[in-house]
Amino acid sequence: MTSKIKENNKNILRAGLYVVATPIGNLSDITFRAVDTLRDVDLIACEDTRVSKILLDKYGIKTPTTSVHNYNESDRIEFLKSQIDEGKAVAFISDAGTPLISDPGYKVSSYLRNQGYYVTIVPGPSAPIAGLVLSGFPTDRFMFIGFVPTKNNEKTGFFNEIKSERATVIFFESPNRILDTLKTLNDIFKDRKIALVREITKIYEEVKTGTANELISYFLSNPPKGEFVGFISPAEETSDINDEKIKNMLTSLLKHMSLKDASEFISSTFEISKKTVYNIGLEIKKED
View 1: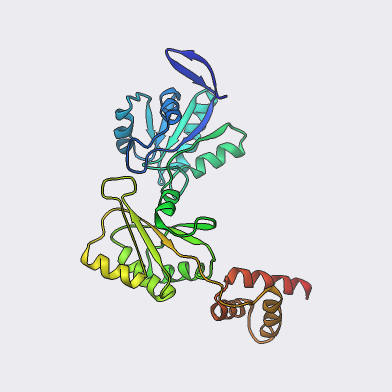
View 2: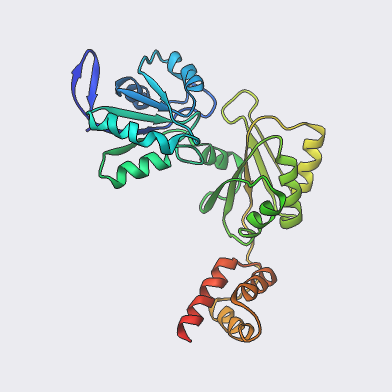
């Protein structure tokens, strides 16, 4: 229980931070508890107060708001802490979905929790999870890697790191960069299936699935619009290589090259995680 008593038809909430999920598109996708919490708190910290006003007005929420976004979050921590020190309940919302997931809020919530303040979640919509359900890709194991780097050389390294993951990989990308990203995916993932989901829960919701090359052809004819949640199908097991075999190969290779180079060689040859190989190499060095 977080409420104590009623005052002017509002629950008096425990002082602390309430991380509240909001709709990712359709404004009706909000929980009763989220609406009640946003009405009952003393202050709402918003990624963009102008965006949040649309939602708050729809539900008649008059709670005062303040702006806390990626560029001022560190500077606003002390202010939010001071509000809680005064006994206030503070909600944190992003423009859409669950805060902290490639959105502002992590610095604030982490700091307050580490300082012993009350921090809780009012769960709800999340674009990565909603998109995963729509993608048709395996849902039993997945990895969220956030926004794709903007520079092409960084983008290549970014995707090479996860090319051997036997899990559905989830990423975010903007419409003006999606074609460049698809070209990188085509170079790295060849015939692996890619799914792109946009406008989730809205009238123009769309799911396009195919190889990266097929998606490039589609979006060249249909200019991309809206933010994308992207999905890469899991890598298939291509060999029976195990940790013992990796260890034996590394022991031999480390006589002639660095651990970094040996890890990259084995990773690219057998399509397994470079991190996995590198960690086995570290164990070998400890034994030596």
